[in-house]
Length: 320
Image 1 (cartoon, rainbow, N blue to C red):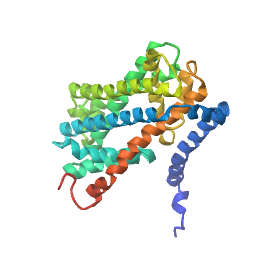
Image 2: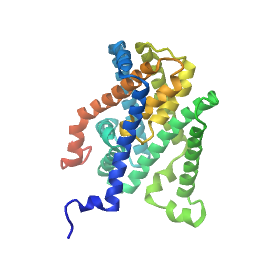
Image 3: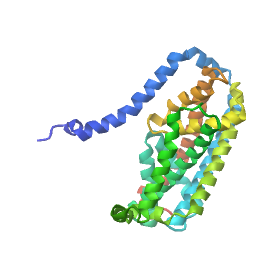
Image 4: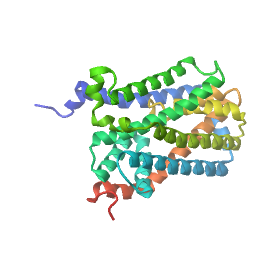
């Protein structure tokens, strides 16, 4: 007989709890170390002296541009691999993924895949492959900018970070080679899977188009931050900011903490502490991170009822 709570005591249950607890513990540990180095009073003073209204306006512009271009890229991927879809149909579901991803990034991607599945009635495995290809292209864009920054100032970034772009290149070679029948019997066995269909169909011009669109948003983000820093009394040379802010984004995007907090703030302090007081950098990094995240979440709240109706309201997405 199974007793209440026995499932939580199984190895899989314990590993699941551990996976949930580790990001929270790491986030708490990073902030404990940061505030051990930086007295909270100095952090609060740095936040209090900032010119908040124009800062919030700039962050709102950044969030809006990110949302619109991000949705456009998603619409291109779906058109290429699944069929025609109107841009405005995707705005609600893309916005909803932002608020879900605050809690769980994997759940947000699953919700996106479910929406496309209901819209096109295609196998979930094929849709998961399309979402996976998009994620890999987004990561590639970030790594390209981060690698360029690290190579621009040799020795400034930890050498171990340069292993990440190499690992990413290996992943691309393995996935594309396997999806197209390479690597002998193993590639022929797994490459024909429906989950690799989008990778088999992906063309170079399509990948470059996604990278160009994502890269334009990254450049816009760098320019916005270069202006927004001034509202916190921080002046960082533009070239240095262009070189290392993508590295900060790269470190902050690692899925190891809650809502990507902690790692981003630590990276801001590590790379830019020679140009501004650590308390000022902490105040700016927290304010910009939370403002951008909450602005995206606000879009999600606006569209969430529509997405819920599409997914669970008994009608197909796109039906009127």
